[in-house]
Length: 401
Ligand SMILES: C[S@@+](CC[C@H](N)C(=O)[O-])C[C@H]1O[C@@H](n2cnc3c(N)ncnc32)[C@H](O)[C@@H]1O
Ligand code: SF4
Image 1 (spheres, rainbow, N blue to C red):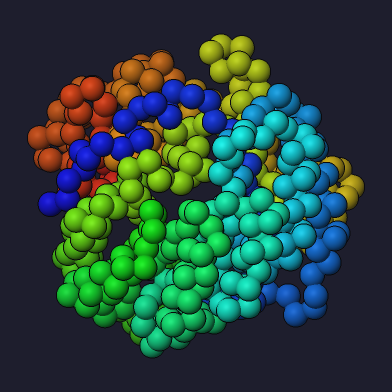
Image 2 (cartoon, rainbow, N blue to C red):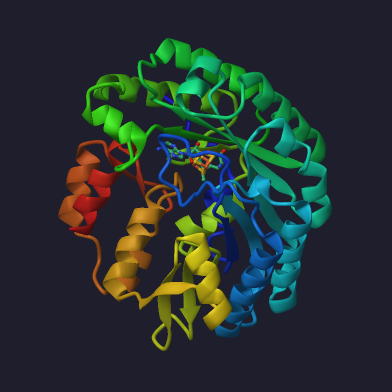
């Protein structure tokens, strides 16, 4: 089994410092992949990027008026396909962030990119605009599989994009999807080892999820797409953990692997329940308005998903919010479990008790520990064990009940 106790940046020092992330959603793709249910849209007419820049800047201004005085520690351009944006668009959005908030000198600025040659040709432009990390959606290293996944690139093109990323950025990551139809552990092991030869400090490895209302869901329902059974999925997961840990990239989150200290700081903002602004169509945010220790509230925000409707709202109202809810203490405590238990560092049960107003049930903890699904670290943190990760949702549901 993989070693989860190698020293890493998750041992505590970052969790105590307040971080503020800004998420920017670019909602367009060249085509829609049949497994994907992200808020992404295909448009055949050219996108008016200047109009989007004005709307992004307006929503940033409105959000900053509500959450003033923050220092931005990370910015993440997600999608959709942000690598379809012109570098000048990215630069203008970063300028807007810098006009309304302080930006930390060591800010992490990530952009998600699809690994086609056209997109890779923009990498230098993104770096000049301020981006210092890219995350590439490689998905698979087999052309037949890439075709089945509806991807617009070959494995070779993807690896070339990885090489360009490596030459342009100090930090890069790429994503692979595993537990794909008919995939067996031995072939996945070879593919993963090949990927690790190209990997830098970070890799995201997602098990294929059949998302409702996608073409894959329809094929699955019709019996035309067979995903690995539970035992095979388990073996694929164990293979992933063992190979990555042996390569020095242990999982710091259920699907994310990094060299100690090279974790994606922006994603840690979500999992450690820090504060983040969600900007753009269908973006989610969490804003602490006032103080959280009694006098303040944490808001869950979400914006209109359809790009054209979001634009119209922002142009009229200065923001595209359709959800703006105060979270109850119970909801915050549930989110704390749901997010924190995804991390290898686990959670501090005392923080849960402070949020929920009651401790976690010791009998439930004891039963989950006895079943080998939960562990207590020497520092008193509670974390899901490696055998527990594949059934994380059930563990969280049990603890939160
Ligand atoms: C916002 S998406 C992709 C960004 C970029 N457009 C791309 O496709 O390369 C982020 C990642 O989620 C993963 N993903 C999307 N849908 C998935 C699914 N149904 N199951 C597992 N992983 C999925 C993919 O690995 C993808 O790279
Ligand atoms: S996986 Fe990426 S490229 Fe494919 S539809 Fe989803 S966001 Fe777009």
